[in-house]
Length: 135
Ligand code: ZN
Image (cartoon, rainbow, N blue to C red):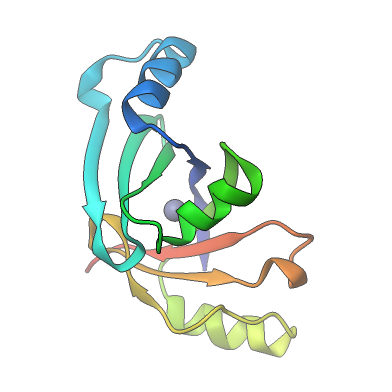
């Protein structure tokens, strides 16, 4: 089952500069910001918690990162919307029954969550991430 919008992700060239911008936008204190590196996506990530949801800022760590490719094509901007689910495997089955397909198998994302993405061609050109918390 889908629980909530977990986060909205923004691709950025420079994480520190984007953090300054979003700190100013939100006016939040630094305790609500968590930074980590995600090897599977070759990115450095900052999560800014806002109530039950987060804004995720994504900075590429290598030219091979999917985020580097996105930035080269589009520049900084909205990258994906993440929905929290309690069972990613069940969601995969449910989506297949309505002809929506994941981009590859679930993998480990930020915070040790199990994540997968849906093909934007099938979702109105919006990249959607499904995220399941570590049990
Ligand atoms: Zn994400």
